[in-house]
Structures are given as C-alpha cells and as structure tokens.
Amino acid sequence: MSALLKIKGRLTSFQIIILGFISVIFVGTILLMLPISSQSGQVTNFGDSLFTATSAVCVTGLVVYDTASYWSYFGQAVILILIQIGGLGVVTIASFMAMLTGKKINLLQRQTMQNALAAPQMGGVVRLTRFILIAVVIIEIIGALLLFPVFIPKYGAQGIWLSIFHSISAFCNAGFDLMGSRTGEFSSLTSFSGNIYMTLVICALIIIGGIGFLTLSDIVHKRHKLSSYRMQSKVILVTTVVLIAVPAVIMFFSCFTEGSISERISMSLFQAVTPRTAGFNTANIAAMPDVGLIMIMVLMLIGGSPGSTAGGIKTTTVATLFGNVVSVFRKRPNVNFFGRRLSDIVVKNASAILMMYCFLAVGGAFIISLVENIPMSSCLFETFSAIGTVGLSLGITPDLSIISQLVLVILMFWGRVGGFTIIYAAFSQQDLTASKYPTESIMIG
Image (cartoon, rainbow, N blue to C red; front, side, top):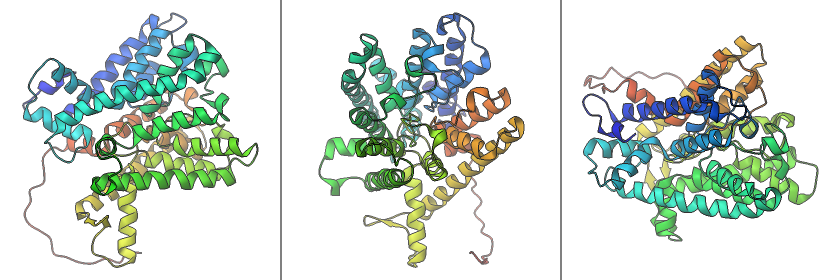
C-alpha cells in the first residue's frame, strides 16, 4: 500500500485512492479463495470471494455466506483486517506505515491524504492521520472491553474474539457479525434484541465511527467549547441527533408496538442507528411494516458523515439540501449555518451527489429485478444498502446470480470510495473554458 503513495507522474490523488482500494480488494479476494479460509477446507470460488472482500473493504456487510458458519478463524481474521483497512481508508493506513518508517511525506502524498480524509486543508493532515490511528485503537479496545460482559459469560474464551470482532465491525460501520453459528445463519444480533447494554455499546461505536474524524478531533480537543467547533462539526452533530431521534420515535410507535417499554426503546434506537451505515440488526427486517422499511432505506441512503468509516451521501449533504430548501422558502440568497455562508458550489455538489446515488441505486435495482425476476421493492432495498455501504438485507443477496452480485459489488465500491472521487479520477482535467453562455430562465415547480 505504501508503494501507492510513491506513484507520481500523471496519476492524480483520486486515482491513487481508487487503485489502493482495488489492490486491497484483490489481495483479500485471493486470501479468501484459499482452502484455509473456509471451515470446509474447500476453495471458495472467485465470485463469492470477490463479493465478500469488496463488502469487507467497503465496510458494507452484505454477504453471500454466513460469516461465522462458513469462514474459518483465518477467513474471519482476513475479513476483520479488510474491514479495518476499509474503515480507516487505504491511504490512511499506508500513510501511517510511511510515518512509522520515518519517511518524509511529500506534497502528492499529503494531497492524497487530504482527499482521503475529506480534510478542509492540506496543512496538519499528517497530524490528523496520527490522531486518527491513536483514537481508533483506543476506541476499539474500549469497545471490546465493554463487550466482554456480553460475550464471555455466554461463550467463554470465544467471547474474547467475538468482542474484538464486533467492536471493530461496529466502529468501522461494517455490520459483519459472528453470531450465525450460534443463533442461526444470518441472524445478526437478533438474540440481543432486548439487551439495553448491548444496544448502547454497539450504537455508541457506530455513532462515533460515523460522525467523522474531524468532528471527533473537535470533540476530543475542544470538548464542551461548542462555539469553537468547526461549522461542519456543528452541522454533523445536529444532523446526527435529528437522524437518530426522529426515526427512533417513528419506529417506536409504528414498528415495535409489542413487548416491554425497554425492549421497544432498545429495538427502536438500534434500528434508527444501524442503517447509517452499520448493517447490524436486532429485529427481523423482512417482517417490518412498509413505514419501517422506507425509513430504513432513507437512512441507508443518507449514511454517515464525511471523513468517517460510514458511507452514504453523508449527513452534510442532507443538511445542505435542507438548508437550501429553507433559503429558497425564505427568499435568502445563500444557505447559512451557524453564522456562516455556504458557497454555491457546495449546494451544487450536494444536489449532484443525491441525484447520482439515487440514479445508481434505482438503476441497479432495475437490472437485478430483470435478471432475477424479483419484485423491484426488494431489489431497491438491497441496492440502497449496497451503495450506502450498510449491509442490511431482506434475504435475497445469497441467492443472487453473478450478474446481480457484480451490480452490488460496483455499488458497494462506489459508495465507499465516493462518487466524486470516482468522477474526478475519471475526469481529472478541469474545464477551463472562460466563455459563458447567455442567461435565460426556466420555470421550476
């Protein structure tokens, strides 16, 4: 991976990021194909290995085989390493390795790190990378320790591995679990549906991993001084709270109407947090009413925040689009947040991202529906889950053909790497046309 950061010439930083992810996926695919990776000792075919490796690196969680019952400890370890690399980002890992060896980080490498971390400026990006690695190690260790009381009393020494695996998977918003061989294949965390403690720990890891490393840096370094936070951090925190509270309340009254109050609260909170974009579930998703499924699809599309382990169009995109609606209704010339004005290019980018992801998700669902002869609604759920790098499923993924799996692979890769990263990598040359066409108005709405 460190070799990628040395590539110069005509490769842009965006192209380096894409090549990094592709390289890790390829290596992961080869490792998962080895007989030692499966419990049966058989070679796993290339297509299924590619799908699993892509899902792990893109921290999605969609699987064709149950992770616990199909993959050996070696295979599970490979998947966990791929999750960790994908969650932090290939460039972040490569940069840290370069720093450990004492190598000087050049300008191209710093620019690549900036784009990979969604940092606002190149200055301080090396320091930010160092903070990220230290923070991630501490958070994941604490998460594993907090999960010990859940898994060790129930599964003995295996509980240590379960705690470590689920801590990393939750923080990286991956959604891979190891409960299939213990509570039934593809059961996720449904056996802990009423466990408030488990719910709070997993939700905390998902949220911390999904708010973005810049926001996490503000929280750690500036603590209660909210006024000194970056404007982006303020927008992310407010949007995150809204996107947890509102769906949780809706699900409490519409989806989980049976059981004790504590169980309903636990399940409502978990299903409000996990679609953005972890993929664990403590309820039978397929049995949820339409209002719950639609809510989950919306949350899957939104995802987490920029520079985080999560995918989706991002919380800042939704906030910008909502702010634009408010500015139009109130006849304001610009979108304003916390005493700051957003530039027009930010609003244009937000609109482009939303249209791009919706078009790809719907287009992918259309292809899968035609190929598999499956209802469009079920296909939409899977494609929204894939492009949002979530991993929630209605159960159709394991039975899909290679063509449909390839569609989901492309969507997962697109969702993790980022639409703009792929577009800018493909079209690296900026349009420098100085001329402007005459202005003319069209009616909207």
